[in-house]
Length: 432
Ligand SMILES: Cc1cc2nc3c(=O)[nH]c(=O)nc-3n(C[C@H](O)[C@H](O)[C@H](O)COP(=O)(O)OP(=O)(O)OC[C@H]3O[C@@H](n4cnc5c(N)ncnc54)[C@H](O)[C@@H]3O)c2cc1C
Image (tube, rainbow, N blue to C red; front, side, top):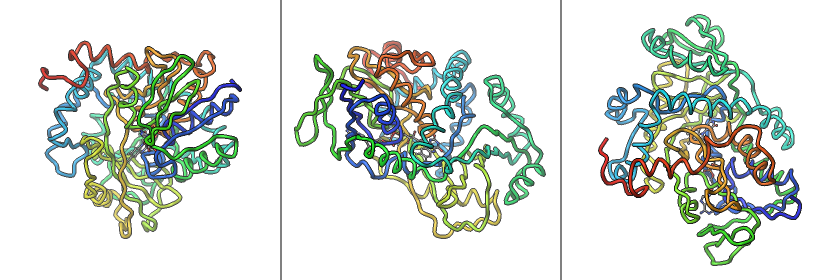
């Protein structure tokens, strides 16, 4: 691949991992991002290597919980009313993904990716000097009621069938592992394969430094257009200059669908905004990620402080953030962690690139083989970034990838679009 020039659009964790694998295979790489070192989902996420998350977000019975979540102003889910018309095709496909047959298919595809994660992540961290930043301590999912724990049994059994190590603990066993937990906790589940990293920003910063030290060019520019050309593709920047490449990889996170549309590929992709607060001196110590199952949020012990985060807000890419959500999560956490001091917390929010079936897009363009896609990783972009980089690297150099890539193909949205509306994103007729 040494004579190949690859342009990667997007310097989030996914784009950087793609660039890493392209460089490793000898390509000349240019990464274009309007703000390469700036804030993005990859910078402020919870730092979890969440390999045990192998079930899609849409599962049978989920819809029963939705009204309660939406009615709570700081609940785990919110939809901005003005965005709902645009969201309908996505919501319809989200509902379709929740059938039993689809959940089984999607879970298998998520597990196939997640089972590869450490094989791809560990050498990458070693190369960029961050081996010591990976903490393989597992995660503890806690329940405040027996009812909540019982209701989750099918979910845990499904995960076990997919190779996830699941250990049920009593409240006392949970408090032995994490003495900061208070009496609210009644049950817990330990998932030892989960891990966390010290600081997600350090990963993107170190990866970018490694890439520039190894010959990649990082260009700070807005991409306004991508187009196929006979020998590859062109990238037009906001100042109208044009870059040529033999291959272009779109890894622009939640902004990727507009770029794929220019090539003629439909992607159902939404911003699922998440929130967190990072507390440098929380006055408690956690050893591993805690997942508060009935309230849908997490606390991750990063080197820069305790990061408490969650929430799923569908309001589009332009909606202003509501940081009351970040603050509300800290108040919720205090109920589980009575010694927690939330003072001085830094509030943050970012756009998760969410597909309706929870699967990322790791794919060639349906019509132009020189354009490739690596986006839509939702809650798992840090977890699956290195594996996505490896798989796209294989596609770039014409090698067979180690897992079948059909489940992640961009064509799946066109097929879904045909069954749900005449024109994707038009969607005038289905009411849900
Ligand atoms: C609150 C929260 C917590 C999370 N926790 C976790 C976690 O614990 N573990 C995990 O695995 N994942 C987690 N995630 C998800 C993860 O952060 C994302 O899936 C991942 O960061 C997406 O990476 P990306 O590279 O695709 O996108 P981004 O990081 O969003 O990067 C996309 C880049 O593309 C650039 N770009 C876009 N359009 C253009 C354009 N036209 N021209 C130039 N540049 C452009 C942007 O500037 C941006 O830098 C979390 C997300 C959130 C919001």
